[in-house]
Amino acid sequence: MAELKHKKQLFFDFDDTLWDFQKNSAHILEELFYEYQLADKLKTDYTNFEKTYQTINRELWKKYYKKEIDKHHLRNHRFDKVFKAFGYTNYEENLEVTNHYLRRGPKGIHLKEGCIETLDYLKPNYQLHIITNGFKESQDIKIEVCGLKSYFSQIIISEEHDLVKPEERIFRLAENFAGAKTEDCVMIGDSLESDIEGALNAGWEAIYMAGNKDHNYGGRTIYKLEELKNLF
Ligand SMILES: [Mg+2]
Image (cartoon, rainbow, N blue to C red; front, side):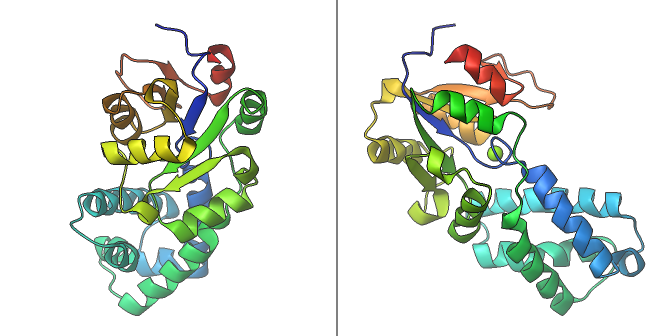
């Protein structure tokens, strides 16, 4: 595969590429599970609750990306659906749990392994940016609180532009914001659909951050962020 070292504009996805979304969100879900005595109410254990939450959350985000539901619906029905999956109905309590989750969730500080070391290595020689699919208020808090903000020149949050990855227009917009040429851009992300296909369709290079996921992607792949030090 072609060398990447000469490409100077590196765009990172945020959730589960730099910021450990799974770990941060599991931590809050577990707190809420015990605070609201959900074991008794849902008649299940935490592991089952979390698994169900993640499945329902993923489905709702897919619908949101397809513009089948809006932000309000996504947020206000997420825990309600999880509750109902266990035969429990309490819409008001769902809203309370939602409020706590939204307030505490973005304050997680767990980063992916090697994140700081890798960004420190790249920063002197490359322009670093973020393109993240998400809501402005939560992504802003996450990026600030976890201490990564100062590494990035441009931070592009999908909601602010009413565009989402993998739409080509968000990659073009990112180029404009960064003052970058298409041939200088590389996307690094953990979603084959949003990050990798999106970037490749826009004519960028892409690096799939597979983590410990099973996959059969044949393109450029890393399993840990620190592998970027060998590529740049
Ligand atoms: Mg991601």
